[in-house]
Length: 257
Image (cartoon, rainbow, N blue to C red; front, side):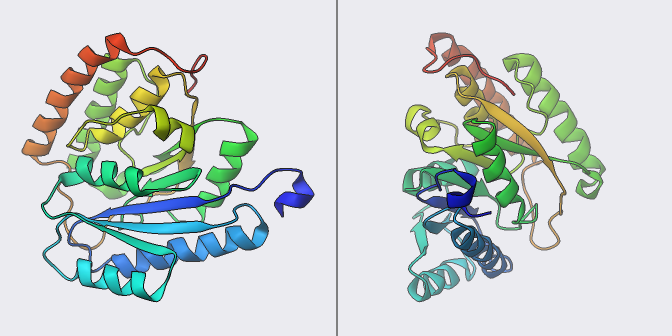
């Protein structure tokens, strides 16, 4: 339904960014899917403009060249290149810093959910007047037993240490209003940055609402998020954040999750 007929003001600009390292097998599909949904949102009056950002984390395959070619062919596509590999934490910080929209979505290049879920997420963000929508996987059987066990204990540990009730905190579907990013300063370099974003937002008083989405596991390339080195880095950053949060002063009222 167009924004004019629903009485709602459209979002001025939607930013979608993808952190990518050696994603030549996925990049064209990811950007094309995002572009298609954005065009539908513009046509329906839910957004006025959009931008698609590829954060190339010093890829060694064809990702940088493909990304540059897509940007040259489409003014809505931008590329941020890292001179050195900065892992997920550095890539997310670059993506959020580069995004200029009043609402920003971060997700992975392998499209772990159907991009059309973004339409529902935007509607939830506006209807329930929350500051962030964080999605969780409805069916995680495609992860495999090792990742499933790792995720179960990691989510439980984050909930225990920080008191958050977000059930799938590392899932790459975070839709944020601009004011969240203006007040939350992210510091993590590891994959803990997903949790840090939600935890800092809630501690600052921003409201986070969860929605369930169908999950589509990676079928190409390699995920490294369950390696020992990644897990060790996440635990160390978790300890540092726990100490730092003692001095956080909320900028908004009570949070919800």
